[in-house]
Image (cartoon, rainbow, N blue to C red; front, side):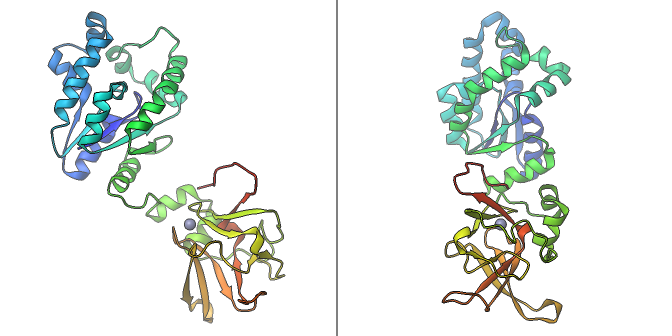
Amino acid sequence: MLSLIGYRATGKTTLAKLLAEKLGWEWLDADVEIERAAGKSIARIFAEDGEPAFRDLEARIIADLCRRERLVLATGGGAPLREETRRALRAAGKVVWLTAQPETIHARMTGDATTAERRPSLTDRAPLEEIVQLLARREPIYRETADFAVETEGRQPEELAEKILRLVRNESDLPQSDAEWKKILTPEQYDVTRKKGTEPAFTGEYTDCFKDGVYRCVCCGAPLFASDDKYHSGCGWPAFSKPAGGDSVEESRDESHFMVRTEITCRRCGAHLGHVFDDGPGPAGLRYCINSIALKLEERGSNDPPRK
Ligand SMILES: [Zn+2]
C-alpha cells in the first residue's frame, strides 16, 4: 500500500488517482469510505456524533484498508492524529506527506465549494488562521508518520506523481529530464551544466571571488570545491587545485572542439562543471577550471540552505 497524508486541499485525492493509474493499483479516498460506512456525510458525523466518534470510525476504517495490497490511499487531514492510525499506515507501506503553504491551502479551499460543505471547520477561528494553527500543531505528526515529504507548491500533479514514484522506488529525486532541469535552472545555468556550455571568460561571479566557504553544485547542492583550494589563475574562470572531498566530482575524456581535455562533472547529478588541466600549482599540479555559473558559494558561517 502507498498512503498520502497531509492537510486538506494538498491534492491527496488527485494524486492517489494518478499514482494508482501509473502503478496499475486501486485507489481509495478514506473519507469516502467513512461516509459510505456511516451512511452520512463527514460534516453530519461531526455535528451529530462529535469529533472523537468520527476519529474512532476513521481509525477503524483505515485499519481495515491497511490490510489491502496494491492500494493507493488518500487519507483525511486529521487521520494521523491517532497513534494507531500512524502505526497502521507505516506498517502497511510507504507514507508520503504532501505539503503546501497555509496561504495556498486557504486559497484552494476557498476555491473549492464542496470542501466547506463536506468538511466542518474544526475550530471557530478565521479559516487562514485556523490553517496556520492546525498546520503548526500537525506538522510534527505528519513528519513522524511520513517516509517522505513532498512539496506541492507550484507543481503539477503529473510532475508530483513522478517524483513520488521515484522516492518510493528509492530512485534519485533529482530532475530526470531536460524539461525538469529547465524549470529549476536559469537558461544560462541550464546551457552550461546540462548542455556542456562554457561561460565567457572573465564574466563569472566567482572568477575573482576569494570569500571563505564551500562551492556547491548549482543543480543539486552537492559540495564540490572549498575556498581553501581556490587560487588566482588569471585564466578567466574560477580555478581550484583539487575538488572537495574524495569523490565529489567525476572525470571523463572530452574530445569536443578538436581538443582532448578532461571534463569534470558533479558526481551526484552529472552537471557539467568545467575541465581539469595539468598546469596548476601545488604537488599535484592540477588546475580545475570551473564555470562560475555551475557553482553556488555557501559562505562560511552562513546558515542559508544550499540552493537546489
Ligand atoms: Zn550536482
